[in-house]
Length: 187
Image (cartoon, rainbow, N blue to C red; front, side, top):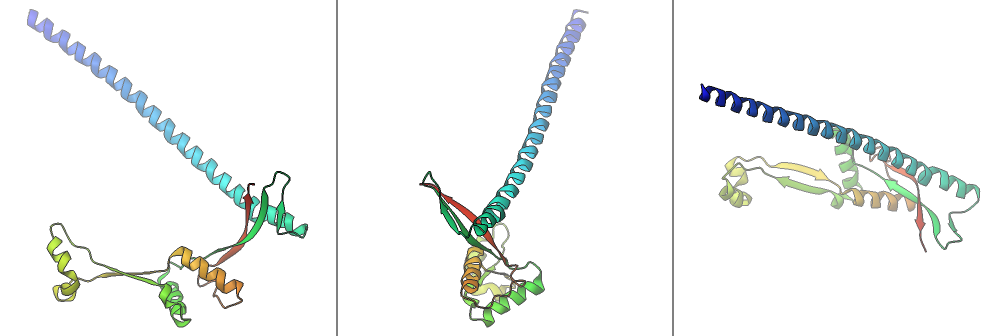
């Protein structure tokens, strides 16, 4: 009988421990959910701040300076406000437009801006085959993956140079964006 009572007491203790652990787990899950809400809220607030920043930097200050007949202004504290043109461009993701953009670059003597990456994937424990690939790829039946791209900063520089020099640049083919950006330089 004593063993039975001892076993029941042990079972009761284990049940209490499990209940305490469940309460702790529940508390931590609630904390995690609250942190996820806080992160989402902070990310949304950051997005709003970036939109407001872009509007002030790209529209409001440049418009005010233009109304005043200025492109830059030195402030009393020694800092300077300067508005500069901003250029953005991307190669379209749509395969037809993408190929047209690459063809335009080639036809205009700018094909060297295109990076042509070729890669092959090997499976686990195929290191030897990977080392021999340069000579054996086609004979072994591997089909390399090819990726053409133009670095974003290179494309932006090309767009800026061509537009500032009055040269042709197909705006829609390269998703070109031209706008203003305000830069504040502290003294």
